[in-house]
Image (cartoon, rainbow, N blue to C red; front, side, top):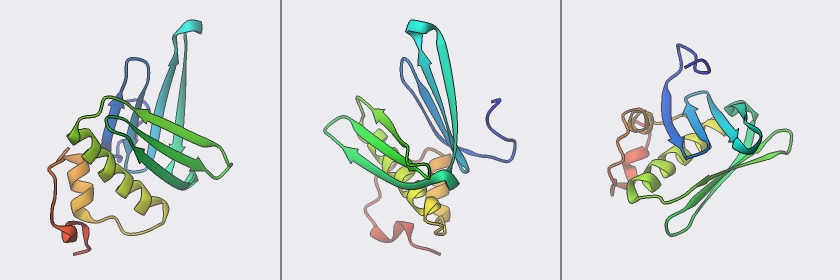
Length: 130
């Protein structure tokens, strides 16, 4: 709430037992909790600072890598994923890829993320421009 601006929309949020991340239409906010020393670190990364991304899927896990302008990689690991979680990650990856490459975001993609519509789409033209 304190890190999201009024004019921003939350696309997707992830939470683990320790950390969580919120992806908006402008940035990602990462909350990293280090329980051993009772400390929470909060990172706000503008999509403008991300120069490349990659995603790797395993059977039930995935890793999203964000490479920043400064050369620092940020690795986000997702574990125990269901099929819907993988679809949601693919949608997010497509959004981020288009965003960091200054490409137009298809309206359908944006709406699906905001409405958490993770139905499997078999039509390859589903994300084409209108």
